[in-house]
Image 1 (spheres, rainbow, N blue to C red):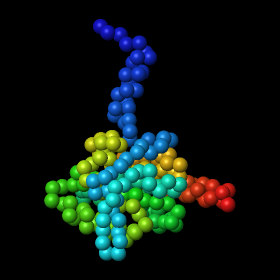
Image 2: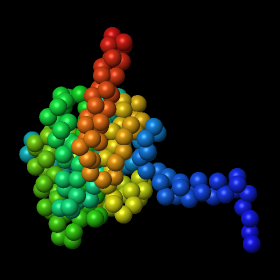
Image 3: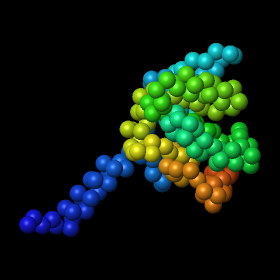
Image 4: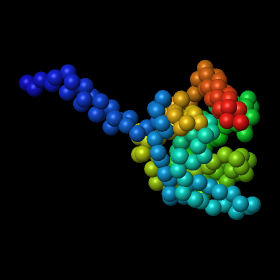
Length: 195
């Protein structure tokens, strides 16, 4: 019977953990890079919509709320209770929301509906970033597993401060709201120091 030394066993377990969670967003670590070239960010110019490649390192120096989910009815409102709470409680110019929709997991024949809904959202929230992930690159790159969704709060240095792969309960929403508020205050304090 083979015997693994404790150091070797730990290395094997850490290797498996990195395969399972490796590049996914984790708290207290930089947001892993993600670039979406197929479709990408929706740009609105008047009544016209175009798509340009999008990268997760866009707009540094801001408090970011990133939400990634499938283009399905069951995921459509996965994180909206929290983003609605942010909108009700905080000045929307103080933070930035990026919504990334995975078209690869949308039901066959519903892509046009998903794109139409995203256009409506962009008209309603023109300052928000809306991204379509044609091939589900985010699920693979961020290793989101079967759930295929994530909400991350990222500070102005690009470090993840909170992560959830499912809906937030009431206490998580309140704690996350206070976290975003604190991060905004930190950004404002840094801006005052630089004046």
